[in-house]
Image (cartoon, rainbow, N blue to C red):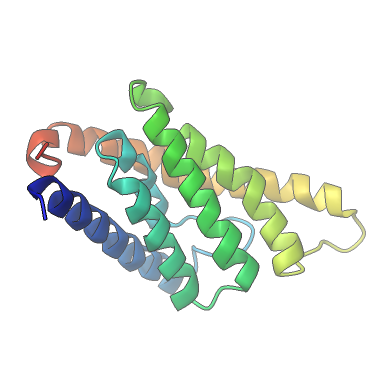
Length: 170
């Protein structure tokens, strides 16, 4: 196996493992589920800015996290897909540092409310599904803004200085 492939697989596996651990921490603190979700692991969605290995790493990490924390099947499928799409978007926008968290925020903001409504049946009594969807877009978007926009950008700037050492080109 070439050095480049080993590096890619190692980075992806490490990112997946860190994602799972951070999700478990947020879960233990009651921050990772329902309307306002502040998953510390979502800060990692800026990592495709540094390496394409983060794309499968984030997707697998989210998939494993959703399975291991007992999420509903729609959340396992579509929640993980939202993370994958967000990671792909971050990689596509990698030349624009300030746009790194934009795709994960938007993907989760528009996909996860559907999971909450149809996967978990979280409806608010007295208002329509579309009003619930709008409400959950705001609350999930707020959680993602905190996770990806604030924590993610702090992480991005912290890692920027050590980019060549942490994410070497093989």
